[in-house]
Figure 1 (tube, rainbow, N blue to C red):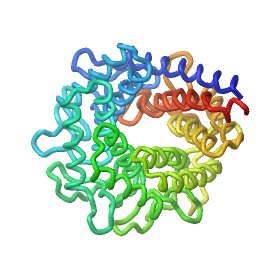
Figure 2 (cartoon, one colour):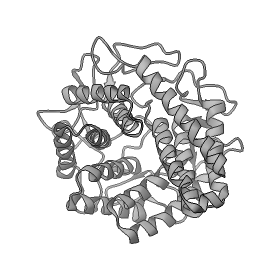
Figure 3 (cartoon, one colour):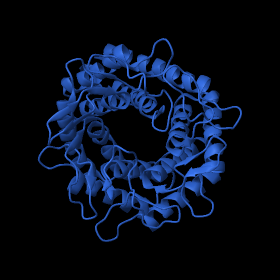
Figure 4 (cartoon, rainbow, N blue to C red):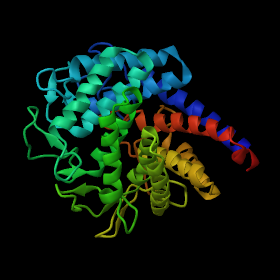
Length: 407
């Protein structure tokens, strides 16, 4: 067991370096500042492409976290670059919050206030403050938190509304993307609000913030996690009535460890114990999405019984962490094996050995989805980079425990 874990850690250290080398080599926009908004499958950059706030905040988080873990100065430079661009171009100085996107010159493009986007700004800026201790980042992130609470929080039913106009008025189109349901509340936004607030709590242990984290965890336990299946329900109306029959296996296994991490961050032991058991149940449900090759399928429609037989990059990364977390809780060798198999699948089918980074995904026959980008509004170094960072940290901790030495 020790040899297996040490090898797994070495490979994650190597993979993290390779992923970040790609982003340092290909994505810097030397002409307009920041990073390119789009690079296609063949590593061709599109200098005139729009730039998304989610991508830039994920870059900020990844390089900040990687620098904290490794101490490499080149990662600090990338984090500084991302921070400078976000503060200069994505913060809406007139109405608060962040723009969804700007054009290649930094002019506001899509200006509606998507709470998901504000959450990622909080997540990235909090991590950057842990690295830099620059007060401007802490001030900005607290302002974003207070903005979410002022405009998006539902004081009657709890939770957060999806989106508003630039001026914080109601809006007809609440969707993150064209594939999403146009509903008042979503699992996805709440998962990343929870993730963001937990990271903010690390730099600002405010009692009201602690209560908000507790409340969002409770929303997951009471509403978002299906009590019959332990899968996540994806969309809801204002009163938390389910509006979706889709299972997202990647979100299942991502939530399995993120909710637990949030409970641990605020130090509520009773809540931690409760969430750990729930995390195991979610991980068990996510196993339904595993293929024999170790890859995790994308989505399943419970109404039509249709499985989308694609394997995207980010569910594989989350499976690596989520199943490892389940093994840490219970010590069941099968869950560790699921994590290892997810990594083996990724090495075989998801990594672009010739051109760098991970593919967007592969189809059932393992053909690569070449029409999808390497870098874009959604394609980022956050899921796979974070998986490496998390596994390095978790394996290092596991190797120090007598239990795992005996195993």
